[in-house]
Each structure stands twice: as C-alpha cells, then as structure tokens.
Image 1 (cartoon, rainbow, N blue to C red):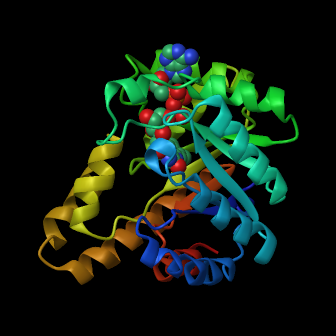
Image 2: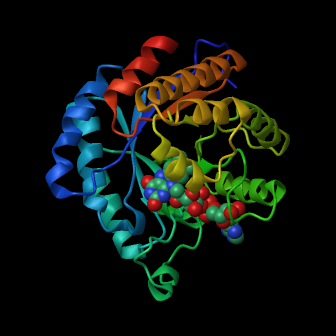
Length: 283
Ligand code: FAD
C-alpha cells in the first residue's frame, strides 16, 4: 500500500483506434493527456495481436516524443514465439522497457485452431519467457478484484495470480470495478497470500448507457446500488448520465486515495476531456 493518501501513482490507458483513418487522432489525444502529467500511459494490444505495430508506434510516441513512460500491452493469444520476439525487438529498438503481459481473449473472428495455436497458454508463461529473453523488461500483469470470469473461485484465481508474480510480474493493474469494497477485499487477500507487488486500481468512467452494456457486461464487474441508481435515474438523459458517471469515478478515486492504494489507472477511453475533469477533481 502507498504510505499516505497523497502518493497514489496516477496513470492512463489508451487504445489504438481500430480504423486506419482514425489513427492519426490518437496523437492529439496523447498530447492532451500528457498535459495531465501521468506517471505512465499504457497502450492496449488489439485482440488477436493483428495490430501489434500500432501498439508499438503509439508507445514510441509516448516514450520518446512526450517523454512519459509507456507500457506496451502484449497478448499470448494470436502470437507465436516468433511474433513475440519480433515485438520485443521493436520495443527495445524504440527504447520501451515496460510491458503489460496478458493472455488475451479470443476475438469473435478467431476459430478454435487459431486460438489453440499459441506458444504460451497463460500470462505467466509469457512473463517467464520475456524475463528469460530480455530480463531488463519491467513486466506488469492483469488482476481481477471480483475474480477472472473463467476462474472457479477467487482462491483459485489468486493462486494463479501468485504464479504470475513468481514468474516475474512486478506490478499489477486491475480490471475495472465499481465497488471499492471488492477492491479492498482483493488487496487484503493478495497480501494474505504473499502477493506484495504494487497493485494499480483500474477505474473506468462510465459515461454512457452503451458503456454499461459493453464494458461493464464484458468485464463481469458487479454493479453496486449507487451505480444502478445512476443508470435508472439518468438513462433518458445522456448529458446528465455523463456527468453522473464522471462524478461516480471521482468519488471512487478519492475513496481509494484515502484508503492508500498504490496507484490509480484511469481507462481514458481516448477521451482527454473526461480524463482532465477527473484529474482536476482528484488532485
Ligand atoms: P491469465 O493470467 O492467463 O488468466 C486467465 C485465466 O486463466 C484466469 O481465470 C486464471 O485464473 C487462469 N490461469 C492463469 N494462469 C493459469 C495457468 N497457468 N493454468 C491454468 N489456469 C490459469 N486484452 C487484450 O486483448 N488486449 C489488451 O491490451 C488487454 N489489456 C488489458 C489490461 C488490463 C489491465 C486487464 C485487466 C485486461 C486486459 N485485457 C486485454 C483483457 C485480458 O486479456 C483478459 O481479461 C483475459 O481473459 C485474461 O488475461 P490475463 O492476462 O489476466 O490471463
């Protein structure tokens, strides 16, 4: 845990736009986000690994043009050893030394054969491989305050998380959550099970009803009453919904800071205006 409530590290996540003609827009998003002085910005890896070059390009801009630490995501799914080696070489050449190593999920277009045809089954195997090939990379991993959707129990998930840390994962970033108590319970469980690496709390501002149907449903995150009240009250009014969603994220972060979390990782959704509103309120 952080020493006091003012020291939580603040960071953001961005994603490479899916369409090539929208790609250039990500640079102005990053320019705006950089003014908020995050400790690092992480860049997602397209499901299935088909657009890894975009992740590297964006991470390169963050690290070398903006002078902010970049964390490049990387997945097992969709990658063989050779493509992992290729991306590691590209990251090294771009002076990027931070990776968020993930298993990934199966994209809708991927068949069983492609999904199974990977060299690393789980994130812990990818982490061990990277540490063996390139020990100077600093590795982060994902974790789930309300357990991963495939895990039989929280106990089983925590055991696997410990494998991930023992494989060389030096930092964890959580799945989005709306219930801080779930996060606090999770952090205590990690400590009780000997997981002592910093855990960054992933907070996603939910600013539209659509996001409730996509991000929240996909993540399996539980919806506390305070949030379902927002949905019930503002679902017919997009602007008020947006404001209430941002306010909810601000209250969550302030509470987490008071508790003394190691870090807050804001899923920016490539929206600098929303991220700025949150940063101004929490600093
Ligand atoms: P793992 O750690 O492999 O865990 C997956 C499941 O398998 C869990 O149930 C776990 O308990 C179990 N397990 C773990 N290790 C073993 C083992 N050795 N043997 C048996 N079971 C095991 N997806 C993307 O495609 N691109 C991204 O950029 C991306 N970024 C993300 C960032 C964050 C912060 C988070 C939380 C998720 C992100 N995801 C991303 C989604 C992620 O890929 C999925 O949540 C995926 O289902 C699990 O990935 P993982 O690395 O946690 O997997």
